[in-house]
Image (tube, rainbow, N blue to C red; front, side, top):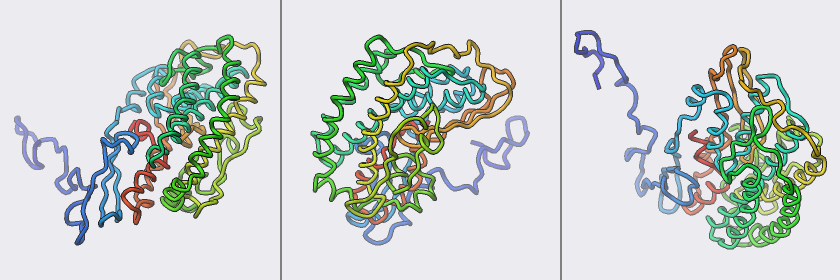
Length: 405
């Protein structure tokens, strides 16, 4: 690479691609000069089963105590937002699925709502009901994954098996609905890709009836286990003030005692007409905002999602074209739109800028709740034990595909 002040082959000043005054690329990492006596640098990940993805965490340790930490992201970067500026509006939806790849229904829903807001179109009652059902089933599947893997991170294997058994039943419903078990391409702009098959609602009701007793069993087995409580109830404390300062959302925010849920406080898809409770941590086992609080909020939210799905099934219109408002070509007028939704991991939003009647968006930006959650990781790990870093990462329930995009 040419140095500043040098010339190119034709004698013209060479293009300067970097400034020698800038720090080196690895300046974010700890250096030996940062260490005091008896301190050392320990890398956890990026190939570590308990980092829940390709996350590298750099720890400055003094024995078993973590003095400081720095998360390193970007190992799963796929340039989604730039890809979205070179694809038509409907074609972006499969890319959104690959952000939070264990909560794909929520990703495509947030994007579809944003484009619909840009176009000034709405959806019928049947589409809205189907979207609510699939979004809440996805929340159940996502929280089951979080609950099962979190128990395994701490050392409990049986809850993992029970949670994944029930999660498979949700994925079976999704597979019957749209043919996919992970990346669905289901929520389209103006509708959904497939109507509910005959008999689907009956199978969904049967799942809900049989799921609740299993959730009760796992709850008793793990949530109130003395060892599990001792490992999680007094570490990774996120105070309400810290949660607001860092703009946390979703279960991580409510786990710090903040009563906020977009489904109730900024409703969409008619959520204001559903009867459900917003679960907020009440800290029965220690200070508010602990790892246990964040975990338990997700457990209780699954019961509320069951209530919402049952109500949506009861009031779902018997007939209705699920693609009635799907435009053949999406060519919005010049403008911009921002729309947010309550995804399983928090407030997922999209900002889209449109050029006048162009089929491809000028700008697409995603707001990732997992990225925001990792912003305070260094704050809540100081002074904790190395073994507790695993519990803290699991309690935040991050997905690196959404962080890196």
